[in-house]
Image (cartoon, rainbow, N blue to C red):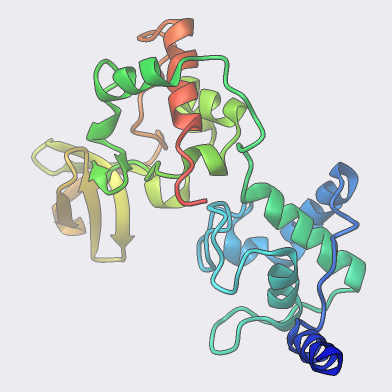
Length: 254
């Protein structure tokens, strides 16, 4: 029996991953170094903040190849076969620093405690703030603004507050606003979906898809990047805190 147990343990050890390590470089100093490495090696596809683009959104804390330190290290070092994700030419320490940074941006808001009241914030979201007209949570709501199901996981409280007070401070490329002025003087505002030399397509403020031939357009205005209003004058400081608390409570699938 003892021999059988020994054999079973040995086989289990052989079946374990080739590496299973604790990331010793997961400290604030090395996370910042990982941020710099990310800008050099990853931002072109994954966005400057990991928000996605040509590559996957890394801020949601969900990864195709798994989200453990070992999984992320393997993805960085080996790439993902059959995709545009290449193997990175990095030292072991550089790879671990990238792992630390990716884990950080995938759980930016999890360690923070909001001072506001999330229940009161939900009431503001649904009522006075009229947020659901543009944003969706769990596929319910509008599509003019970013989806918010995992906002509290992806974004820290300071970022969420700034998004309410200064929405133009950071606008994702997919939600940058345009205003199309027709030859007859009618203005249609929305987020640009596609554009070429002949036409421009956008989603208007009601979520409708619109297409315009440029020969029928007098002007395309791009000087105001956000359609979202600044809430500093329409909501009190307490209401802002409560709304931030509610947004911070949206963690998505953890």
